Length: 289
Ligand SMILES: C[S@@+](CC[C@H](N)C(=O)[O-])C[C@H]1O[C@@H](n2cnc3c(N)ncnc32)[C@H](O)[C@@H]1O
Figure 1 (cartoon, rainbow, N blue to C red):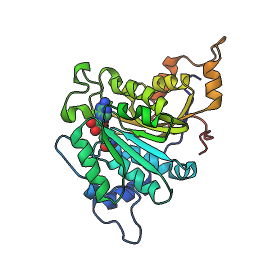
Figure 2 (spheres, rainbow, N blue to C red):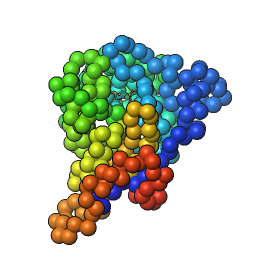
Figure 3 (cartoon, rainbow, N blue to C red):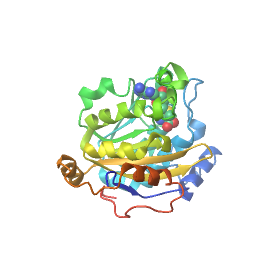
């Protein structure tokens, strides 16, 4: 199988949904501090992407994997494309209090997002180094091979190519052909920045062809699994976790003599049906979780 996706679906997690609903209504119980950023404390700007279903799916994926993240003992975490700061703040809250010496970085190409993210972090009493950057180009030399956890909710909406990277809020969603323009630029950057034990969590849409994304990452030696998948009226979102896997690296280096893998068209068909499938794949995961 070319794309070795394992599924661990945390669809409509009652705990996380309940927690966010309380946070949304400003009813977080004082005896039980929230493990994620509070919507009422998120800073805003008209040109900055507000937390939406995709942001919530990414945070839910991190919450679902929180025990593994804590056991993983990351040293440096990074978000690429931080927007309002909801995700990096949530990550810093859920890990920060329990892991010593943990550093956070966040980048966004939109200078308003950088300011808003700093305000959101400050409002929650957590810290990250927030940098205005195209992906993470300014950090590649400084942090090469050092990131243990990277999170990305990229611009993934299929749009005309000339809308990608334009100024302001449109850069938050414009993903070019198949929504893959920015995604396909992020993956090599992630590969360069991730440590040998690095994990990448990325939001994708069915239209992005997640099977092909996993297949491309597999060629670089990464295994993958879907941590959260969620369908709305408009879109079907997947949060995919990637991690380096020694077996995958060996397979990726070996020449393929007999191709026993299912054709990609079958893989694509399966992936397009994921929202309807109750379960697909092995429950055994090899990322330590
Ligand atoms: C879909 S929004 C996600 C925002 C936030 N992470 C969240 O989940 O709510 C995508 C973000 O990526 C940023 N972005 C787009 N292209 C970028 C690039 N080349 N480098 C860095 N950030 C970029 C946008 O400005 C936007 O804030």
